[in-house]
Length: 50
Image (cartoon, rainbow, N blue to C red; front, side, top):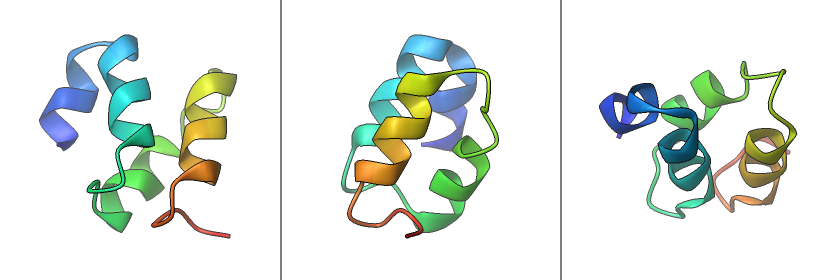
């Protein structure tokens, strides 16, 4: 999934929303501070850090 997230910002948003995304990938995506949609998706993801 990390490879998908690296493909494009649109794919990173989808990966951040996917409940099957591993926590380590979500942690990496949380570093996308410049994209609010990714931040919201990571926060809303059940596996995301609270």
